[in-house]
Image (cartoon, rainbow, N blue to C red; front, side, top):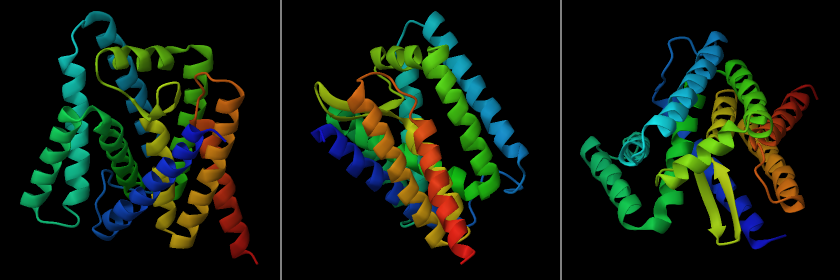
Length: 256
């Protein structure tokens, strides 16, 4: 196994564990962004939101030649995510200072970009997981996995979007490793497994751990594909499939 693949294992596991801790506290605090967590139409709404946001980004990349707008949007997301996670454990003032420090770190230390962006992604995933029950979360994940496949292999607009944002200094991907021996993982590839794992935690921690184990199976499949052919791969299909395998094992265990 290449060093970057090992880093991917460790980074993904750490990210999902962090998402579970944050998500567990969000659930306890009853924090959510939808009125009815069990409504499957929430999944359709969020898919529509993702498609709309992607279209807006593509248009901006085409007609807006600057970089500041994209960087500001990334920094705002990171600030919001870090503050949301921090306020669960410290005072609002301390959470604000921690979020500002994270943004400053992202700007002043280039190598911290992946850590700050990755943490922001898993907090967003934890928020979605705390907001949605498992069935709508699964529906959302499956629809996005299908879209990810089409966007990478068929239309290829997700590849162009990622490359365009990277050229402007803002990214939708976390780079793990350095130089040629590196792997890029999209922020959505951290958000969606985190959402499913946290949503499963509403059932039980054992269900969440089964989902996490399944996600690691998905990472194994993804690494196999990446080592077989270094290229852009849609990561959500194997990751979501892995979580489904883990949850299927959980449901099977309840029948014993």
